[in-house]
Image (cartoon, rainbow, N blue to C red; front, side, top):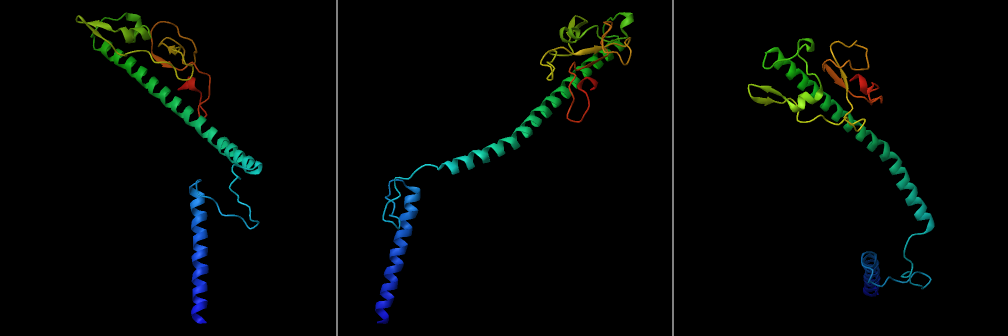
Length: 190
């Protein structure tokens, strides 16, 4: 009697294990026939998403997109600001190198220029120094905030608060953008 009970339990366990294995195989391989449900019908024909599942999925995606959009926008803004800083640093460094070379009398400059370049193109085209061209910039960069090469120039003769260039020489350069940076400052004050 005891032996029959153990055989029955073993048979039940083997049968249960076989059903679980078949269900697991059906989950990962669509070719495996799925077991019948309690009502005796196979759920093989039921595929796809219900309307509720679809709405929940779309809602989750919308929430994720609404969170990711500002992060992506700020990242792009931050990258543009870094490019602006780099471009301003490069142009100001080129102006300073021109001024240093003029102060060392490496080339002739006009007396009223104070040793600064007459325009930004002079930094790109260069000046003659003992038969060789001395260039200070490869090209004038594009302002990342405006998308143009419309840099605002300042000369030594201009007022410190002036927003227009007098045309004498280039002492400083800044962006023409009226936008506000992520830190709250205006781009045209950088």
